[in-house]
Image (tube, rainbow, N blue to C red; front, side, top):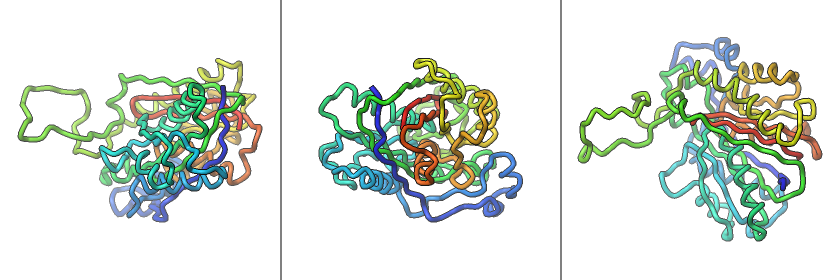
Length: 328
């Protein structure tokens, strides 16, 4: 069973942080960032909660799909920057878009989140005949987890949200999800520490870098090595299940992390960069939102058309990776 993506939607904060703006915080400049990452600016959530951006994106997708929110049976929010430990972002989004008949939960696979959530939604649709529509929402506010004195992270990330309304279909579909937890320490942010009243000194070391709570830590070299292998691997594993090659794909929609990573993956595919949807120059790395934001922009610009074959490929903290081949 495949899926039909009825419509997409997005929400982008009005506030933008340009490369030269970063000179206020760190020793850098536009040329240094642009040549190494491909990024020129990134949206920054100011007053917007993460759930608000997700709800706005979901509402737009539902309106474009032309469906009643009462017919939505499931909402999955893939985010690593939830506003709360509880409730889930999906539950708040359910309230905001008035979808009283929907189950709701969050999924965290970091930057691979949209791939994981889309495939999870397909599995729900396949096993539940009563389920009509699923809304997948990717909403991220990475700026609230950044150390703006750390040049290895603060130049990369942006904020925003995108959503997709999907239904079951007999269209072409294949997927593969994977993870390599041995690299979990290479990209992480701590959430909670033991309360001082109950903390016990015992020399325990969890293997992760020491960093203040809610600050992102990245080993750029290790993540780069993983990513340049994971992107082509994700495609090969998904495509191999249905006998698809890179020549059959109309558009590749990769996680938008770094232009050099995408260029390296394109060479391994033997595919021109002209077949890649690229938005990181003006969005930066928006984690799980990066793929659906690129997807949405491709549709809005008329690049992505019905009947085309798409390769959605991502990687992220965990270290996770995954690929989906589908017909739009």
